[in-house]
Image 1: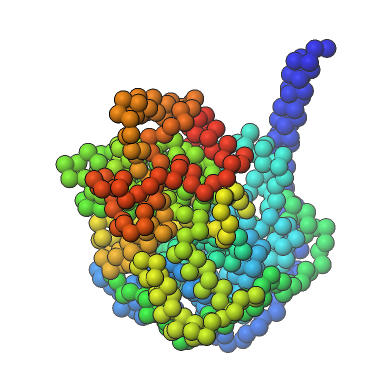
Image 2: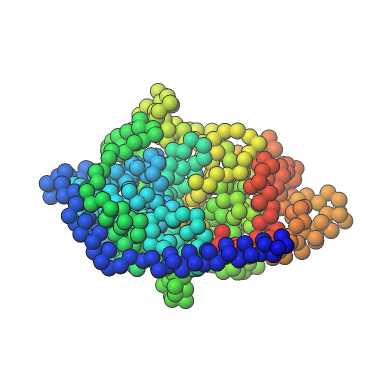
Length: 631
């Protein structure tokens, strides 16, 4: 038998085996009898004990919830009143969640894309369990792909309290944990179904106040990871918009893709194999001192006043938007892409400025049409984009497609692109303050109190001028990546949410966010985004300087042809590259006549070491345009 024939035969056997596995797994849904048996086990063994008998369920005092209650009382249908807080800093973002969970008197609804079992994940989960045990109705809806992939943990959650319910969104083959072969089978057999994920993030308390934005429940979203953390953002909204949040959560909770734990094959099997009631063990934190400090400030009246109450704004109109669950099932339904459509309408109406912050600068076709039209206006709005560099992102495959279309972004859309540096000093300030006094770190005397810490933070910012791992770097030190998704239009209204402004967010994932129609909030968000674009925090993407007239023109012509090809985009000399500001110069736009005198080129992938990820980035740029929507 020849080698090519033998290889082809092996490939066919492997394909048939995978197809057989797909068919087998599709047929392995649980029977109604199995589900009823597991439901009976849960009902018989759930811990019925309570830690509180008071009518308010022993809720702690919260100025955050009080402000939301006051806003609701002052609101009328014609004149809504909201209290909004921009949660830029990671410690206040986590402390606000813990405070609200402890202050809940009636209900807590949580929706997320990722829930890890590191310190952050354990802390928030344990706080929710304790809230349920004191009588609060708690519901958790998490996307299955990156959340709670431990059947033992889910078994414990199912029986820890009758007041706690957990569902997983769109579980592959009706399981909590999937193996690599099942992952591959899911892609092969039912790609559209498997590829549609719930990317919404929401924490809603007593249907009065909610937090939405970009943060998941994992250490790196709150500056608790030792090596790689995110610059991220949420907004806390109290008032009538919370009822829109409640309605959205209810739609997802009741949808057929939100699957109860007893319906999951591996969790069901675990329950039926051991009907003894599991205990809820105390969390084991990697840095318990840091966690204890966070828990303490979450109930510290002075700290809450300094970090969360004083920065709040009392505003009028706020809207919470969300796509419909499983929007890929009926993409033409008017409300299916409600949030996505509304964002596009906002951008399309811009007159003066669009300020966009996104981790992934890969534009959908609809977004491309809008930005192209805006740039053709007689007086086009300025479009400033804050995004990741290859050195800062952990999604290098996505970055490759952003890199491919740089000329289109700069010339056709008029973008001013700023790519985050991996050791951005502005991000390091937030990390240091989120870890002050934690295990292994010393709390400086000047930041020992909430008020002085707050002053120190702004002083430090002013001194700078107002489970994938990233690619290896030439430099050393703690790294940061951008994960915030926000937009400001004409300084009039602003959005903070989960939408990445990319094809996946447009067409596959469900997204959500809050739009605040207030120029003061828009200005706060604008200044926050612009800090990430300052020279010490970001490189500027600009056209290469034409040094040899004829050769430069030929290079640009060949590069343009190469970039337009869906495959074989192999030309190595790209239209644009990264620039860093020279010492002694003032920041300026790339189209300023003095730009090249004050900025020096630092290469297409500054600070990135030669590695397989760098090679793959180049390969995806050359051959991967067809997978833009998947990435």
